[in-house]
Each structure stands twice: as structure tokens, then as C-alpha cells.
Amino acid sequence: MAGNYDEKCDMWAAGCILYTLLCGYPAFCGDDDQEILTLVQKGKYSFDGEEWDVVSKEAKDLIKKLIAKPERRLNAQESLDHKWIRRNCKHDAKKLSKMKDIDGLKNMKTGKSTKMQQMAMTAMAV
Image (cartoon, rainbow, N blue to C red):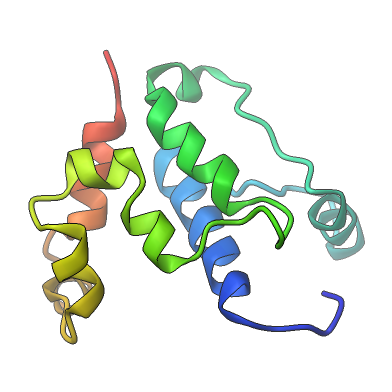
């Protein structure tokens, strides 16, 4: 929002997407665009609500580390090394970072379950 764009912006977006996948609504909700932008600038989001009661602490930790100020935000490799990713991913994180064609992207187009969807389901702790 300050006009400085780098890969950390993509990691922030990934955190917002993960947040939405795990609870069903966006991290930053408001009545209009200005209210949403204000919440984004302040970094105000929460894990309130019963839908978060079943999400693991590790998944919440990853989201917190992605939807953080740029200087504290995880980069792509650090995200792949996060314990929630490592625990829920069948592939070695180093192999994942080198993959050029992830089947999940193809599956999204065909409507098949993606690895991210599967990980989101396993994040639910009963």
C-alpha cells in the first residue's frame, strides 16, 4: 500500500488466502473499501469466532507470521519450513521450493481437491 512491492507482498497475500480457506471469510472485513483499507493498514484481524476453535495453533501461527509487518513477515522458504507446512505436506520442503509445476494448480482448474485444501482440512484440530 506504500508503493513498495516485493515478494513479501505475495507472502502477505498467501496469509490472507490461508486465513480465508481456514475460516470461510476474509481477514479484513468492512462495510466499504475505505474501512477495509484502514483495517489492512492497521493490520487488524482476529481469530475470534467458533470457526477458529477447531483450527490448530500451528496454522494460526503461520497466518500470524504471514500477515505481519514486512520486516517480520516470513519469506517463501521460511513459510515452507514452517512446522504446520512440514507436518501436513507429503513432500520435503526443499523439493517443494524447486517444483516448477505443482499439481494443485491443475487440480484447481479441474475441480479436484488441491494439496492446500487437504492441508486446510488437516488443520482442523478436534
